[in-house]
Length: 269
View (spheres, rainbow, N blue to C red):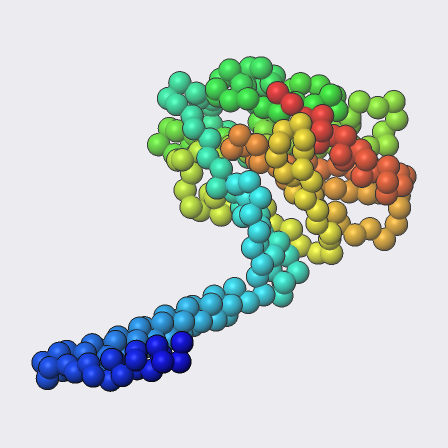
């Protein structure tokens, strides 16, 4: 074996290259080194650019945390102790889906056209070609038209709702439900106006609704006493934004939160 290795070494030592071949091998070695240097420079440059972009984003959104639930963009403004919720949901209405334009008026506000603002679920679904979530918690099926705005005779946005005590022998809980339709005709100014703004001391929770296979966003304002518990719920379903306000009187925390879950799981078409 030793003699065989010795013969191999002697054979390799006798190998000689022509000057042209030697120059070619030398150039290949030099070029490969240059290529490696150029690749390293490009890699280093790209890393630095990526680092700068990340730092810039960190500065731009300092004090803000964004979260996305369904079509909602939820922005937490840490310095202002507030949260802004906006939606990208757009309802498609065709030319046959129309209702009269109405300026904004509250449910309990005296107005001459109060009766004209009332719709049953089925009637409104028929007129607008939409489907509305219903619940056994609703005391009745009468919807109130808060506002319907139009641009060039086409609906840009509309808001409807129910304001009543839920089905209960005693008035120990109250439910307010509203839903908002935003169409492709809505202006940026209108979308800005329809943003949901929350401020003050509150807790937040995401709740997945098995029945609808979607997620609701729950805001729980801190309470100094146990006599009243209030919950705000925001839900996007089939491009319609639903807003719920629930009030519970003299309920324990567990009882109130179970009622919230029961309401969400009861929603259906």
